[in-house]
Image (cartoon, rainbow, N blue to C red; front, top):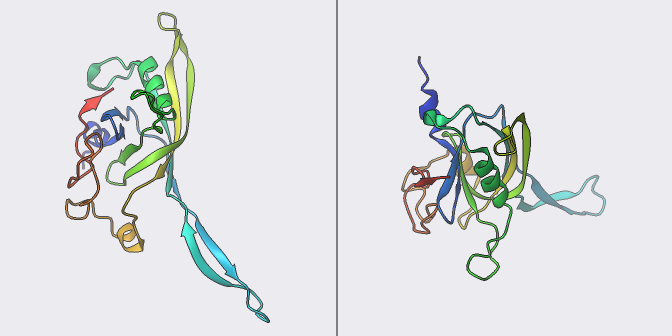
Length: 195
């Protein structure tokens, strides 16, 4: 069975939920880690050897990934613009002052093939520049972007949705598409504008 690498990479990207710009993965990360924790409340009962656990809440699902970008491995034969990618990634952790008001950092939409499709906010981002160095731009020709993204949404998922993921238009109703703010069937649409 042949695997179309480019077709798979086209389904792997981070998109700015507000302005629609997006960053496709150049290479697949070695690993993508998902984590979530549960907050249990102890209910003390006199004479009982251990407390009764009452469900309090759950933390946001957090996805951690490390992306590698190399100036010499352009998708579609184009040279990768390392300075632009580094700036775009770092900007995800900054507030938006464009309107003259203080707006929080933009939410993002993360898609990793059919494994992960979620709206979230960036918890932290680290951009590491590596040699060899390009003396024309004064940037390393390789950057590693480490990022954690925490899931957000108006309609929370439950056990049933997580065990049986369904990204069909019917199930995605009420969720909005990145870059549009409009209700739509699938938030995994092809992103409109690449950085």
